[in-house]
Image 1: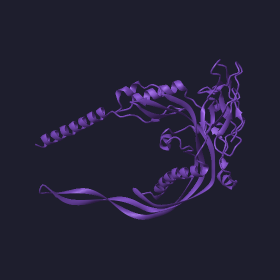
Image 2: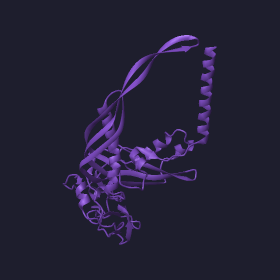
Image 3: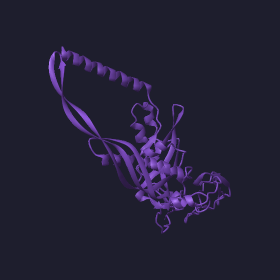
Image 4: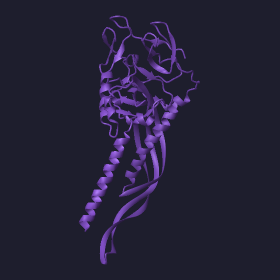
Length: 355
């Protein structure tokens, strides 16, 4: 897919400007000239899922083909925004063209590279059972500011459930210990059938729209302040890498429904009441389903340790770090020995007290 390529020239020296994290402005990496991101004047919108399904589908035509206005190089990428590999100019594809859904919103980077280094340093120094040398890792070998695509879904749900309500009661039991007859209170549970209906409105259920990064690791970077997301503007992604989505709205909705199901199950248990609950079946219907594509800021990098590469992700808004880490066999062995010694000491004290 050939995409018109946009760049924003610097008003000072003519080079391309890039979004400066935490500033709300575009900055020239060469002369330091700074200017505000152009306001779109529009609001973030939700899109009807039913209307999306009704549209005719066209097969995907692959990545964006960028034509660099600086050196004229033509490259292809699965990114929305990137930099020319030959002259370094920031390139942003026209998301209004092509067969993919355009981003509706973006949460701009608040954490710059210096902040990402600080977060990584704090993370490596706080890892228990990691080799001591890991604390000297202060920067990933490659650290790229990357906007990762996510879907958000809104929906109304009505759920009919069946289950059981358990109510505790106590009985007195008689037993013999060391030749003595004693009594004790024992808790039991009476179960009663239960059924009912619960309803809920879900707002901004968030799921990853890319398989390039492990989803469980992206989930661990939550929560995201989606209320601070801005209507998408090319300026916010200029100078940063932005991935296209590879999980469409259909797959995203299935993931969102799985998240909704956990909340609905909790609603059912509350509705059942009693001391303990069992939910046997839940039948949920969905209405007024809407969605949007939002780009979230993540510093993606890897660091080398002991001849192996480890991936790390840093939340570009609050500095939360998730990643792979090495383990120290020596520290783990020492911890096991200390735990065993502690158990042995407690056992000896118990026997001594009994004697």
